Length: 218
Image (cartoon, rainbow, N blue to C red):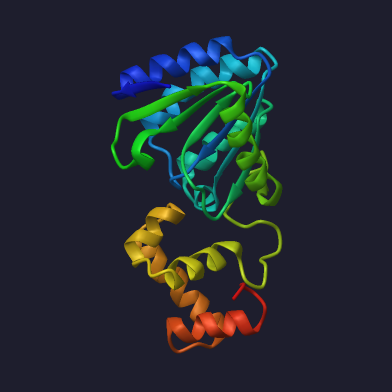
């Protein structure tokens, strides 16, 4: 295990891994919107990796579809051969190189600018299985301009289900927003839309009605 401190150190290590990777890169991108600096820094590496025929598969949050800069970056990736999908929530940020090296935030990401590099097929295989668990159920992101819609609007969107689960677990609006990659204000808006769809007068009633309709698990 190699501990990395500081964004410069982390980026240097990512550059080395990106220039050595031969087959595939798998990544989780939690946090709905990506900072412009992060997008700019990753474009050169992603372009180099994809131009060599290396496969990139990434899973982002559904909320990334609603952010102009982030969705444009995802379309840029797709147009160059990367595969991108989205889900309501992700457990952590991570990148797997050739199923041999894994970059993870240290201390569950609570300390900014700190990461660990784990090497070896054993841990990489376990993390790869976690990736595929989310990948199988994730929604496809396409090159066409995405407005946040995923075809016909489902009766009860996955993002709403995820929010209900978080609220049921006792998360505040702020905590739920961090997990979903949205602002606290957006959490309030989604909650209001969800309650209106269900005809509920409270969040508790919304959870009960959604469960009775079979839209979320008990």
